[in-house]
Length: 502
Image (cartoon, rainbow, N blue to C red; front, side, top):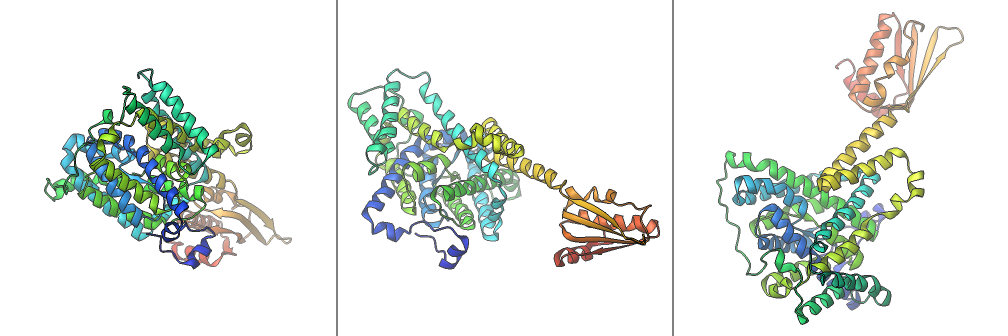
């Protein structure tokens, strides 16, 4: 179950790999950490999966079984150990309109098509595009995640019996104090077990998991295809499939990067992409709904549970399977307040508080802060992490292009005899910085011999070539000859290939 990566590639990356499964299995203490982390993660997973099934318009058991398939399959296939994959809210929001408008029977082909697209992304290496997500967007993503996790728990504390509040305080007390006494057992797991035992023994009437939806019953069979495989069906499902693929990949890869940072290890993003696609196809045929990385539950697993290997994710899937099939009566008795309190602690620890301190904001460039705040605001308003990240990334690119557009400098040097003029161009030339380049030359005042030196510059796009062609035409109109010198090999080849053809 460990990731097959060569030592040489690990050395090149400069980041260590996660501990191997075999090493952990030989270490009873490390193994217990992984198992307990998987159990507490399962408990944190249940209420969200059920609530997301309501959003998607499918039976709660469908989402739970799909989560079992996703968690177990990704524990073997995935490229990021210790990351939790299940039926997630981002995907539920995307598939909800399809289910509402056309019926749940169109979900299977849509999920399978989305999985195939994700496999294609992973196989072709397009997942590497995630490296272009700026740090300010990642920080905004993390901060927005903390806000969403926290606000999602607030309804469980409003309009509830007064007994909920002492149980809430007890849960927080155990989660915050127990780690100072011992870390042998995850504090959230102890808190959930203790609070659940109190409510069952004392017969307290408080909202529990069973109130969120029916989770009893056995496993469903293979999902039946109830729609014809033709162009009409494709026309209905492809927009949803494309959205599921992109939203799921974006949230998964961003979560993988977050776990990389938390654990100070690296992961295989392309492998994670095609593995997610295969897992979604399997979940579509046995469960019915797609999924992606569960960010909050992943943080529970790697931060609170201190998990580092695939064992924890396998245990999470296996325990969820056990709860769905055999222990559903026990699962229904878990008080929602205990789960809400645990997730609130996760939310607070997820936020990058250093990024919003006055001292940090004072030192940080204004564009970086604007991008971070924009990402947070869009995510919180839309409740969609993928939309917020896309908005932040686009804004970061625009602001970057605007800054770079003003770094190009052109110096005019006239020879002593006045027979030649030389222009030294400094800075990268692309559509943002080269559009004003045509105005930097004194066409009517220059002598007939003009040299433009690009030794301190590079040509990056066709827009720049078009501008240089325009410069040549303007000098030709004044009976002058212009020569371009100092281009590096790549820029020279690029210019030669396009000049005169645009």
